[in-house]
Length: 382
Image (tube, rainbow, N blue to C red; front, side, top):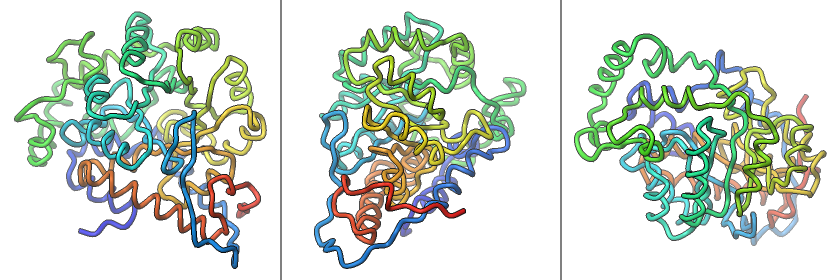
């Protein structure tokens, strides 16, 4: 089967995954208005086509936090992404390394930090939430530093988990424990290839980073219960400031949509900001990330690098985001779709696709270097 774009990977992932897992990846909060707007609003920014500019030598190479990148793209942290293929985060990290872009591991990954770090030669990035259990949080900081992680993403837009209707309907959350287990078991039986691949009949996944707390035999319901108890709605900027003081590497705050919050993040010494609405998975009705991006870029200027996620589905979208102020973009759902569809080879294929699409968009816009991409290249379709 020939796959031409992210949507093709999405369709194939839907065929191969149990229903509850696909819905978890694909869905958003409440009525999914923000989820839809993330992609819709990107299309409202047109690129100016320029001609006769000598675009025979186009380069997507750039540098981010002193790290050379083959293109300005990072694989975003995605919770339990490793359940989409056997040792899934390991496969994705290897694909990212081969493509010359960073991979960021989620706190709530299926594969542990140590396992993923040992599977690649390049340092990976690591993502943390403000966990109520501060001992666990500091242990993860120490483990990440010891494993050679140089860039920490601290996610701040999830003081409480949002309501996601798809997860309730699919059996991932809500209802009785017995109903959830029976519903998911039925869906797994319908996907025997997936069941074998992720090791339900072989080496099992055990929610790697949480094992020291929950134990080896903890299941997905134990995981959700622990997570629900450990999100900390009392967190304030002062708490983030203290974590920043304890982390010796690059400290990037993820989940900023408001210019005033961006200004505060810069004031506490953040090394970067990810403009993000959590892929439409938190506050439904929040502004799309691409609409928020230029407002935040106007506030922080060149003081610190901006990244953007939420809605990026192509190399063309990457160029739009860069033109509006991002130094790089992060993708979550696309790489997970590709992993579910074709494992590590699928992620590699997707990244090659993004790089090609970006080069084409740059050439047709008259750009040959990432540094040439600027706001005067875009026009807003009102």
